[in-house]
Image (spheres, rainbow, N blue to C red):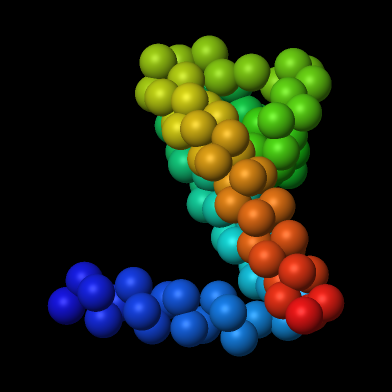
Length: 107
């Protein structure tokens, strides 16, 4: 079961064009940012509005982290930690997918 799933995921990733990969990356990043913003807005009172929570989520996942909005509650900090780890894992994943597509295109 796991091997079949891995094979299917690999076949899907190999068939990606650069345009499809960028679309997939933007879609995943948008969904993650919105989900994180919703969680932050529900959990932490420091985020008065949804745009504030979304801004915090985007800057955290992208590892920019301006520091203009920070979580104050413990639960908010847990969500922020998950966002940080997601951002750290997402950047090399995106980079390797794009490089893989570019290398395959040159062959």
